[in-house]
Image (tube, rainbow, N blue to C red):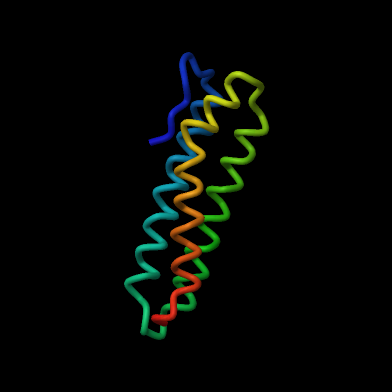
Length: 99
């Protein structure tokens, strides 16, 4: 899912793999919260989704901050839109009037 550019060191590869897992988990949690709208489980599901998104964003920020140019710019260009998408999906979930 997340692009890493060319020859990535093994430690960075592990972190990017972890970020991929966190991204997928966050998307799944958002989907579950959306499905629970108008039920008694919505608030709990939305909170779990928010925590999952925050974990993915934190890992993304940590990876980004650990890189130097040009790798940092490449990583940001390759992955920044995915992070913005995650934030936007959470924002829609939390601010929709359907619940």
